[in-house]
Length: 318
Image 1: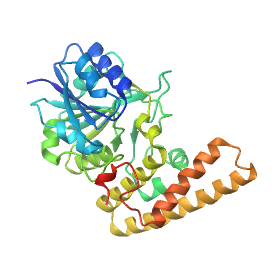
Image 2 (image 1 turned 30 degrees about the vertical axis):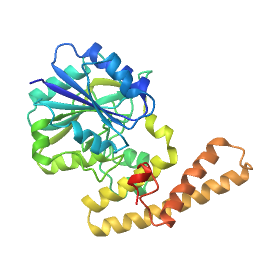
Image 3 (image 1 turned 90 degrees about the vertical axis):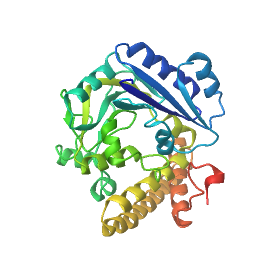
């Protein structure tokens, strides 16, 4: 029996994955662990590189992209570890980051999930915790909500030095009590990519477990590497996940109101970005990029949100 199971889901991020594995081996020296890499059909020789450089790592090789939740679930429960650590390929651990989270979880038996403090390579704090999706957070400006209601909607600008109970943590590096997983179940595979960890946090708290942000556990997060490879598909997938979360966890009236007004929000943004592009004669690359994203989101809705648009492999789409 080991103390920790590290679970890393990879999709065509070979070098990031190798760097992440080096980071684990160089910083986690006094806690027993097993590493699982679940590869979602990469074509960049990720699997070969891991097997050559880290033969002790257990690799689960999928022939297609099964999505984040389904991939994680393949590795959950493989071992009789006390905790599971979900960590993204684009993260690098600071010394003692895992030790800090491990000690905190051992001290707080009521905590089901603990999340690390994510940072940019220059040390700038990243958003590491969040509120559950709700009408207010998704239809209004989050910065305004954080300014008006700082305790209800905490911001990364706040200086947090002690562990703090939160609604949800960002899943780039999170430690989960396996006893809690047995209680609430694994990740919901209806989520292909995005918000699966948010849904998990929600279910944990509904079952009586607490979710905490642990600021002393510092982790470098390069951020959104898989998303950069498929930008508009990722935006569609995020929107789909939002709809799944609302339909599953909110009242039917809230779900219907959200879908209506979120579409209106997308339409307004599309029109505003189109006008901005016209004013600069479509010469601004950033504006053209934004317009293309809103155009694809709008098109997806006009086609009644088909499964074949997004990140899922073509043969899985209907």
